[in-house]
Length: 264
Image 1 (spheres, rainbow, N blue to C red):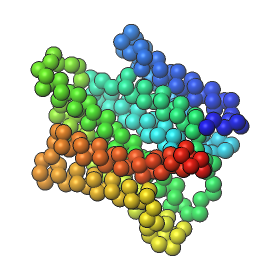
Image 2: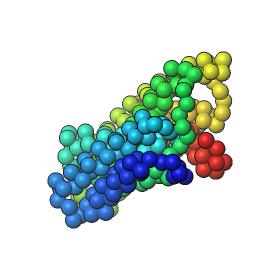
Image 3: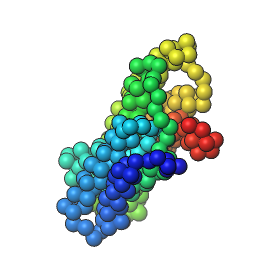
Image 4: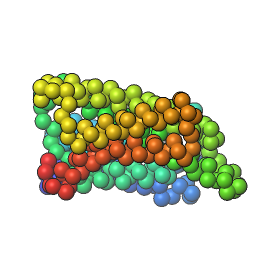
């Protein structure tokens, strides 16, 4: 839970970021395009300051909630870049709500203090892992937008503003492929770290098992796409399965330790 010794400045930053996210999330229909964009930009900057404070402050901490917070910030970063290329991309209110929830969750569950690491491979392993989380999360967001656009087309409803279905599909698989590359690098860095720390390349705990299973799921997704032309609901189901397995790998294991077992 919130630390009794938590810095007032850190708490204030987190609450300010959550409030800034709440503006475009709750009042998207009543705000102008420019006002909504500025509110989201302010929230994104405050969120970055919150992350810097928690990771580089006097007592750096990390855990399942900060991992989700970093992932949400990376997804918003990808969205901001994409909006420059595809101005018709519409996901601002949903991502703002995601950002607010992630910031508040990390405030309540700040994780465990970071200790001096026994191997230089571990920070690389963490950085690659969080980056792969962000890319797969971006892929999931695009898959959700793709399914929503497809449902609209099937119902013969009035066309909604947004990216074309094929563009969303192409972006979904591009993010998934980039995430797969980083996940593969994450596993290799983890093997090197385990070799240094444990004297063997694999420590077969539940985190490793879920990570390998997610890698297999994403490999099947990309192979099915390239070899058999998988698309639509079949591809999205495999993407969701792999993403869930990856979420369980670190976030799930840390949630059990920090919340269920009360250990840090």
